Length: 333
Image (cartoon, rainbow, N blue to C red; front, side):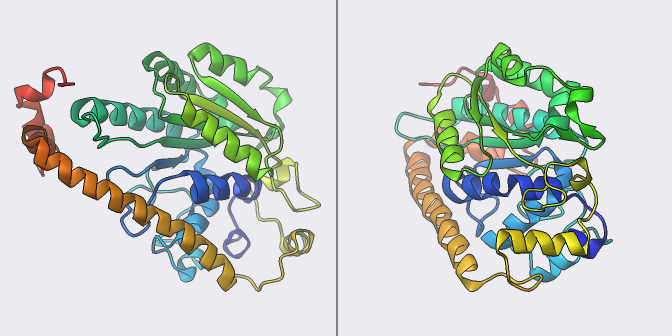
């Protein structure tokens, strides 16, 4: 995608591919057949320059992005712009690009989940019970907005927020030691996060264990540092700043394919790969079907809450909710 466009950022997609596959395929609850399912997990790519990875996921999981859409990466009016745009591409939860901004939006989404759960959940009826995942790198951690948002997340105890830190010690200008040497784990611990460390960014099992450990903490948000190599798989560029924001070049691209044992033609996905992703996506439909049945029971059993919920999502939702005194009352347990 990036080579064809002659511009883009291959480093993050190559370095974070194992994280993306493990998270989206085995730990995230989402249904490509209904991208607006209310109780889906949210994924925010705070490092929006790595959009090629997100578009690949949306294509493989069946969100509607075609192979032609991928071929038009970073082209005018395409569904695959250089940075993800909410409302433009199905499956994109947030417009990201300015580093750190996605972290702030992720905290906001986690606050929304906690608020909705407080208003509408009843014993045995977890209407709102989803996670917000945010992925970003060293640049996101350097930005002030991230610290401000994380401080609030820790204070509020947003346990459904899981931040994944793509730690590769490389920025656009080179090694991060030139300007960024703080202990990020200790900073996040001070904010009130559970902190988890994954030493090898290609170890799917370790990444999976870290995500489940994060979910198990019901009191704190979680911060998972995954040590990756930017441009993983490309012999000449792996671990180097030159992998960050420019195409690999045809020769290096071919070398990367040979190194990774990839023999398919460009813009070709083997059928067994599509089948693997389709099987994973089907679990999302099963999860929504189960939720829909529970939601129907909830509406019948709690008509007042259901009426407020309908008002909340009506066209003039904000005005209607603000004028409804019951919205501001303490939630009934």
